[in-house]
Length: 287
Image (tube, rainbow, N blue to C red):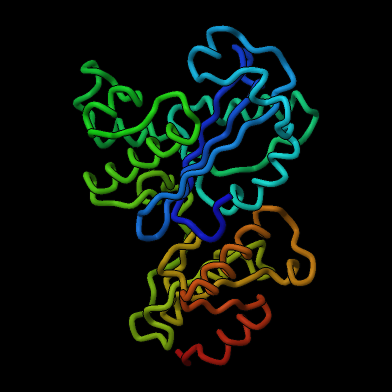
């Protein structure tokens, strides 16, 4: 299984039958910061029957998954990786399948950040509408992709490659293509004369002083405030309520990713909210 921090991860599933909950294979394509792709796939025991049509499609049958793990065990193993990254699916089936299989097993549907690469492809290649469309088979021909369709790992890698091609064509990264405007932090522009000009901060968890006020204070010091961790992040501020007892899986995943990025060599200062506030007060110029 891939480990470490990635730009984003593409995910694809294959199913045993028409039931979306019958996941029998999961594939991941983890895009590194140099845009190299690590591909991983694993079989899953769907605990249901296989349709002949599905077997002919992906060549996976009951005999292949007899000794494979059930989905709850697979999710436990994959959740730390998935929850820490932006997930790409080609079309919306994969997200629906994950939700359906969780309901089937009576477990909570995980909170994951999903993006549809079909939507990205429509933005990058609008001329394909009515001219082959934006499915993987069409994009394979147009973009010259090389992959074996209906293998979860191969399809995940193809979805990741679609995003990389779209980034190059549109000259913007995946975050710029998918983050809605309403999610942009309501903070003022960084003070170009602030003592921390050039620093990039991310707030993780509910701030006691409020996100808007914390962001404004950081901007007054010259910091740019981001929604999520990127390769330019220099500071991450952890809510006091998380110190010693992280509140949610998403907050825990963000903190884990920050440590991984720092361990990988990215300059990253990790501060508790109280320490951050003291830093702000100590450096904020008199006005």
